[in-house]
Each structure stands twice: as structure tokens, then as C-alpha cells.
Image (tube, rainbow, N blue to C red; front, side, top):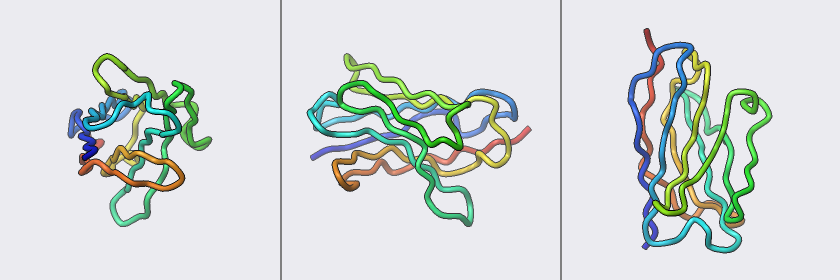
Length: 117
């Protein structure tokens, strides 16, 4: 059974950098052909794909967020991390990590992040 667990601060101030970590169990983040994603859902809105880090270590980021986003991994801990800089109120959302191979097959439970001064 694959499990993903998001962790990080629930409250971030405007202009700061948000950092979230997804800890994976039951599978290795280097397993061939899997993509490890970050997705968010602002209040009252739909899901927004943020980006992924692939099994190979390559990354891809939503062009709308690319200038502020980085995704990295620690294979020794089987974790991957999202950093979103210069946050503002519109970055308030539930953030999810998810595994994708063609489609999403496992999600984390999500973590609420609120941007507020």
C-alpha cells in the first residue's frame, strides 16, 4: 500500500517562501515511470497542478507558477519537497501530493496552507 503524507507550516506570511514535504511509503520515488506531483485547490476553486519531479529526478512546473516554484527530492528519505516563493493571498489552498503514472493512483490527505499576515 502506497501512502503519501504532506507536511509543512499551515500559516505563511505574504512574500515568504512556502515549503512542503511529501513523505512516501510503500514505494520508492525512484521507481521507473512514476511521477510525483504537487496539486492544490484554493477555496471555492478547482484543482490546480503545480508540478512534478519524475522518477529520474527531472522536473516540470506549471508555467503560471514556474518563476516561483521549485521541486526537489531526498531519495535517502524517500521525500520530495515543494518550495513556492513570494507567496500571496491567492496561494491559500489545500496542497496535495500525488503519484501519477498516466493517471493519479495515490493521493496524500492534503494539508491546508493559509497565507496571512
